[in-house]
Image (cartoon, rainbow, N blue to C red):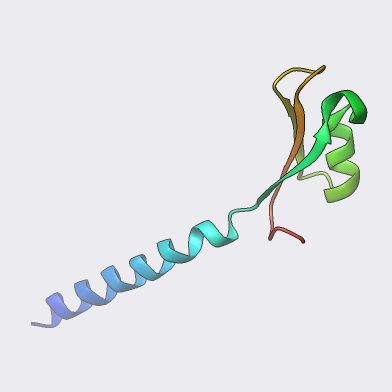
Length: 75
């Protein structure tokens, strides 16, 4: 009987952990036109630190600059 109870407790702990994971995985922010910003990677590192990554989605002329960084989304 004790084994089934401990298995249930472990299952509940895993469910609670996985329900909180998405909230703490990080953030992605759209900073505008790649053409206006220039180098998205550098701009993201300046704003959010060395753990941030920046990329231009959709091409350098018409795309958008996005920053991914660990931590909560701000504003």
